[in-house]
Length: 169
Image (cartoon, rainbow, N blue to C red):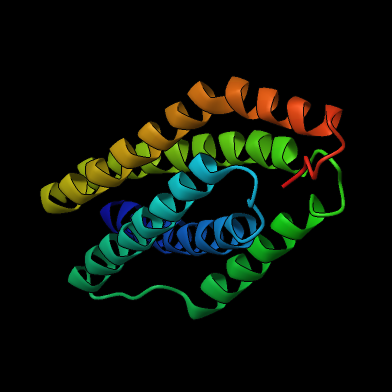
């Protein structure tokens, strides 16, 4: 049974690595378009760098376990991230739709890291747990930041839309 849990942990790490690549692509496409939301754009750029660090941490854990990220999963999730960002691009309320999606995505990542922590504990990977907790804390901070800024983002959107300015991004 230990090897099965080991395999689940390794697979979960590779999946989370791909998820971080998806986050980088999705946020990068969104941040490029946020000309009327400088604070949001800045926080997204910061979280893109955090997401890159998350992927690097996951890579470290995988390599320490004698494994590596899945190139196929990484490429696939990167494509999905770009497509996800493009799905809202045509909408006038793109910034709101992206904010909702990003909030949900952060919680998906939070759930993934919490699950990985259970698996890491089960296989006795204390070092991996330390790295996973660092990433989890950053994901939780980003989710809270989005929640805290949803009202001001919506108010900026309303103000821009009411004055005929480019409101979506």
